[in-house]
Image (cartoon, rainbow over all chains, first blue to last red; front, side, top):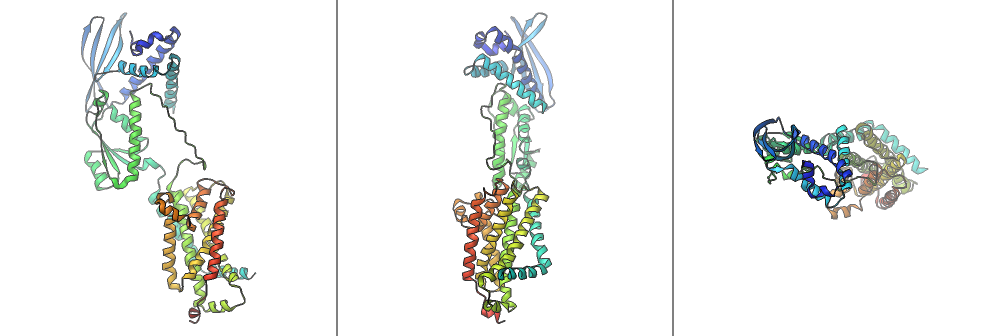
Amino acid sequence: MGADTKALGQHWSSFTLAQQKEFLPLFRELIQRAYVQDLLLFQNPDFVYSGQQLLAGGALVDTKIVTPKDQFDVRYTLIPAGDKWMVTAITVEGVSLTVNYGNQFNRVQSRMTADDLVALMKRKFSNSNGEAQT
Amino acid sequence: MKTLTVMLKDLRLIGRDRFGLVGMLVVPIVVIMVIAVATQSGNSGKSILFPVVNEDQGPIATALIRSFRKHLDVHIVSRADAVRLVADANKAPAALILPPELSKHYLGQKPSTIELLTDPAQWQELDGIKLAMLVADRDTASQSDPLSQELLTVREESLTGHGLSFSSLKQNIPGFSLMFVLLTLLFTVSLGLREEEVWGTGTRLSVAPVPMASLLGGKLLARWIIGTVQLLLLLLFGHFVYGLGLGDSPLAMVAVVTVAVASMTCFAAVVAAFVRTREQAVPVGLAVAFILASLGGLLWPLYSLPESVQKVAQVLITTWSMFGIQDVILRERSLTGVSTVLLILIAYGFASFLIALRLFRYSDRAGAI
């Protein structure tokens, strides 16, 4: 189960196949942008590997983002995917991005349909593309 | 005809005083330039200095500072400099301390307190800073919520003109120009009428077969022409030097200026009727000009005055003159749009002329000197 399906939780099954197909690349893009945007806010960051734990069916990798004044714990939850590892959750300072996004999806889903959600994500991307060009 | 003769005679007399004529323009222009330099705020919010002490240096501090920079002149400083800028130098209305571990707490969804050191004496700028902080808080929160939607989008539309922003020059240039024209009229009408007594012509004029209405009318006509030219030139100076917009209708502007100066000229004649000697002209003129300028919204916006004062201001000639000019400059009204103000000013001027006519007399005592 990827971060996308985890974030959507119970709502995932209510998506049609076509909606799931449209949703996945948008969600991936959303995560990447949010993650990169957050990273860009760190001043002179160093990324430090601080340990790993192998679990049944996956692994946890602990890292730190070290800035001149502070350090921030970032934990990645991974599962094997063929000969690679796939990140299924990112936890920053004990707060899971997946849970955070899940809460946001829940909030949005309670008042809009799957099509509306996809349309909202598309609109966000087109807006941020417009901002990036200006 | 007799009115015209008196007017032409007075215009010739005024024309001889070249220094006085130049001074009528130079003095207000110098004052307007000084005021413009002192109060110019073209960048609105960005002219507010906002020292920020970044003891966090984390991503949340960066996001907050990025948002502040859209609206304020942000300077990253040490805590000692922040205190100095706010408390000692009084250059900044407030300074913000972003504490250590602010980002760590924020990302861990734990509350933090940020400290705002303020100088309440600079309350207007302080309010601007507090608004910018609310916006920054919203911007930062939306950063961690990629699905956040702006449910309210503000689309600003001016109902009274094309411009959405206001510069202090739009208040100061017309305000100070009107004040100087009023001041000039109060002095010159009073002095001009009383000088006839000093020259000994007052008594002759009062017994001459010229109706008092023609005599006073001719003298006021000369001052009206000079005052109208003075006000138009001062507004044109503001237009060409400071880019002051003069509205969409030159006709409306000329009409407002002409009628406002006519009305103020007649009002100056009423004041002149109470001035018995040349020596009284300066203190009385100064007092009347400054009271009318301050209550009539020439020195500062009328809406910034207490409500009771605003009510009193409704009966002042300066208030309606300023309304008229602002209607043309700020609200871009046409001649029809300013017709009510014009009618009020005309009525004011007509009533003032009748009162002046009734009250003004040349003094026999002065004429005997």
